Amino acid sequence: MGAPQRQVRARVTRSNRSAGARRTLRSCLVCGVTMAALGGLATAATADPDSTTTPSQADVDAARQAAQGKARDVAAVQADLVLANQQLQDAAITAAKAAEAYNGAVYRLQQAKDAAKAAAAKERQAKADVARQQTAYGDALASSYRMVPELSTISALIEADGPESVMERYTALDSAESAMDANYDAYRAASTLAAVASGQARDARTKAAALEKELGTARANAQSAADAAAAQATTITARKTRLIGELATLQHISVSLARQRQHALELAAAQQAAEAAQHQAELEAQQQAEQEAQEQAEQEAQQQEEQSDDPTSDPTSDPTSDPTSEPTSGPANPPTHHHPPSASGADAAIDFARAQIGEPYVWGADGPDSWDCSGLTMGAWQAGGKYLPHYSVAQYDESTPISPSDLEPGDLVFWGDSSDPSSIYHVALYSGDGMIIQAPRTGRDVEEVSMYYWIPPNFYARP
Image (cartoon, rainbow, N blue to C red; front, side):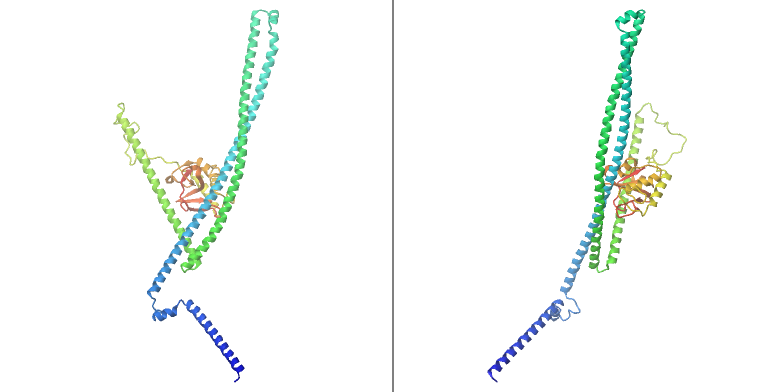
C-alpha cells in the first residue's frame, strides 16, 4: 500500500471515530435529559432497590412540605377572594352614597325653588302694598294742600263766621295732617318690607342657582361612581373567576365545583354574619327594654318617696286607683311603644314594593320600571297613602324614629356611616320576619332578602 492510500485510510478512520463520538455524546445527552425528567429515579433505584414500591422518609418529608405549601396557597387564594368581595362591597357603598347625594341635591334644589317662588310672591305683594300706600299718601298730601289756603289767617278773619268756625277748620287741617303722617308711616313701612322681601327673593334665587350647579356636580359624581362600581364589579368578577380556577387546581377539583363551593361558603358566611347581627340587635333591644323598665321603676319609686314626704298626702290612698279593682301583674306603667303603622297603608306599601321585585336598580330612578333605594320606598308609601321625599335622609327626618324591637311591616330600615342620620345612604322597606324589600345597587334588581344580608342597619323609622 502506497503512502497516499495509507493517508486516505487514516483520514477515514479518524472521521468514523469522530462520528461515533458525536453519536455517543448525543446518546448521553438524551439519556441525561431523560434521567433529569424522571427525577433521578435511576440513581434512587441504585441507592434503594425498594424505593419503587416504598417511599423513603425523604419522599414523605418532601410530600409533606409540598402539601403545606399548597395549603398556604389555598389560604392565600381564599384571602384574595375575601378581599375581592370587600372591594366589591366598598365600591357599592361609594356608588350608593353618590346616588343619595344626588337625590339630596335634587331635594334641596326643589326646596330652594319653592322658597324662591314664595319669596317672589311675597316680593310682588310687598311692592303692590308700596304702590297702594304711595297712592294713599299722595292723595292725603294733595288734600292737605287744598285745605291750607282756606285756613290762612286772613281768610280765617274775613270768612270765618266766628271762633267756632275757625277752630273747626283748624281741627280739620290737623286731622288731615295726622292722616297724611299715618299714610306716610304706612308707606315707609311698606317700602321697608318690600326691600326686605326683594332681598329675600334675590337670596333665594342666588341659592337656587348655586344648587343648580351643585346638582350638576352631584349628577356627574353619581354617574362616575356608578360607572366605576360597574367597571370594578366586572374586574372583580373576572379576578374571582381566575382565583376560583386557581383554587380548583390547588384542591384538585373541577372549576364548576369550586365555583359552587365558593358560592356556598360565601352564602354560609353571610348567613352567619346575619344571624350574629340579628342576635346583637335583639340583645341591644332587650337591654334597651330593661333599661327603660328600670328607669320607669326608679321614677315610680321617686314619686312614691316624694308623696311620702308630703304631709298633705294620704299614704293609704291613691286617688288614681280603684280600691275595688283587682291587682294586675307586671309594672303599673309599662313602657309606651310607638303605634304601629296603619295596616292598610303598610300592606299597600309592601304589596307595591313586592310587585317591583325583579325590576332593575337605576340611580335616581323612581319608577315605573326601574328604581333606586329611596325611589322604591317613596313609591311604596305613596301607594300606602303617605308622601315621602325621594331622599333617604329626608325620609328618616320626616318619619318617627323607632328601635329595632318596635319594627312592624311597612317601617323603614336605614344604613349610615355613623350615629348621625345625615350619614344615611341606603333605605329599605321592612316586610316582616326579619326581611326587607329593597333596590340594592347597580347590577342587582329589586329583591326581598334578610335585613342582615349585608351590613347591619343602624337606623329605623316609621312613616
